[in-house]
Length: 405
Image 1 (tube, rainbow, N blue to C red):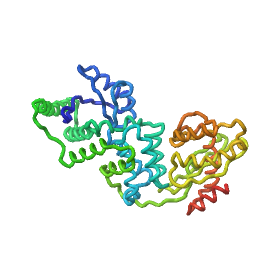
Image 2: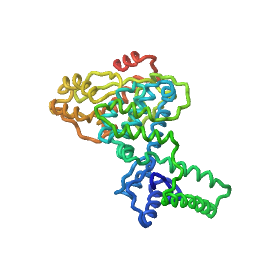
Image 3: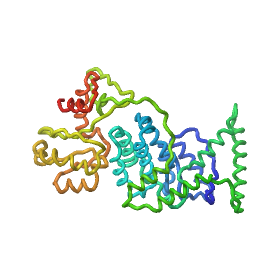
């Protein structure tokens, strides 16, 4: 990037997208004179992220905003929420607020996410859980990777749209039949000669092609919003930023919700001496209920049904009655509490509450359901409630079946 104009300097012809392929590319680029970048922007491919971490450990790595928003949009589609996104204005704004988290200061991400969670209804639980696992809790994508607050403040590019645009245009130009490495090399040389002319103009203080006026105004609005961030007006900041995010409309599809099976129905311990169980899957998505319960060597707690999205305060309220009142009865005098270690479970206010109640919490890895015994209990309950493919028309019927089981 030179004076906010982006020009390609290196072309890499890779045979694949694995970390090894990218390692070889960065290894050769690093050998070039004056290769001392301050930062690098990429998409969120696993191979790219791993390679940058291994080969360029001291360089600031940032993810592309466009690819970040694209990943969220794909999840809206895959979770069966396309029709809801198209028809529900509130839900559409909430989805954009998830993407707007990229513009909030890094130290405000968790608080902001908790605030957004309260605004989603039950139908979006899968989407919110995906975002939490991928970007918030113990993420595959660190907040430092997808958060761009500092880039906005410094008025540097947020997405790598310029690179994508040039790549697509170049791909169209080299789309020739019976291509050979010689012909491809010639195309690259011609392409590079054009950019050398652009760089010469830049060095001579000439203007080259810039953004359209509408995009410049959008950049200015986003920069003003980011620079005027007020932590006491967090909800309004997210809504204002979301209003400036434009996403494509999803194709409309017929979408029905069935209480067809609870989460975890497809997980079970498999006895090799017996035949495998055949497990059906939903085709259009189902409405759901969320429950909380605990058990120990001496018994189990009552079942608590949770309304809406769980946050840190709601989780603490859920624990107060069933956990504190019966803890010694089901766990013994020296019992230890094991939880899922989701983000709301590990909130500072909840950790302080555990300490005040003298509850010993088991330290263990987040997002490791195979280590939590209650996952097996949920599996047993799921198969019993939904035996023989049974489905339910209302949540009341579903809850009654759960309690009876």
